[in-house]
Length: 90
Image (cartoon, rainbow, N blue to C red; front, side, top):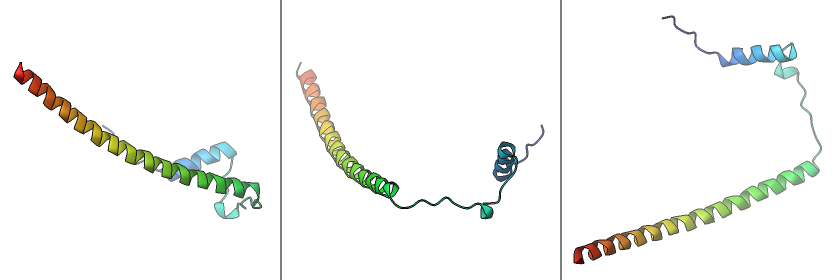
């Protein structure tokens, strides 16, 4: 059985990039596109605030869930004990 060569991700990505655009541009020669802070910054701030609010809500729901799980286990244990008592008395 022939052994396979190890997969080289960097080579694969460069090969695919060359096949898509025709040539590979070094990262150092690419100029980033800059935007002025305006609506994008405000929207980003709103999104971050919303994420924080959702995180708080998630923590609250998680606490409630843990409490409900504890209560459910207690109810199930009581139910189980009562079933045993009923079957024992029959």
